Image (cartoon, rainbow, N blue to C red; front, top):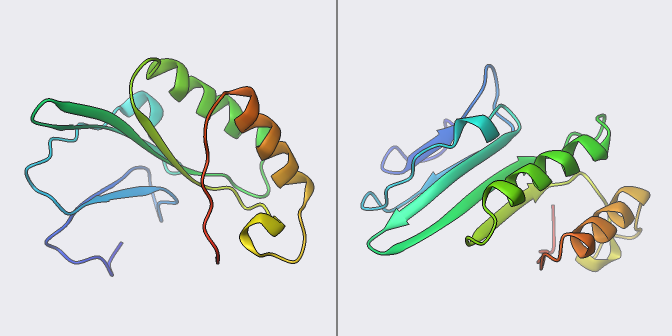
Length: 128
């Protein structure tokens, strides 16, 4: 987090090098941390400005961990925010031709099934 300008508010949690973080560029936004869903690899904020409110989650999915534990964590966040606006940003450590990789691995196939089962819409971006 050293490379981020000091003029921005940075949120991260846990000991050592955080794997998940959220950066806010607007100081007028109120953003309390939701601690039960935040640790070194997961982070949840309630974003509030004027009459608008939504939740923002940053999730790091460790390649060496079982993906089911990550899915359980995301489902907990979806349940907690049920009926509210929610943005989830993940680093899933998966590979897919959808974002111009040369292959699609089993981890990405599991991600597709999970997002469809949770009725979420997801976006991807090209690159790493």
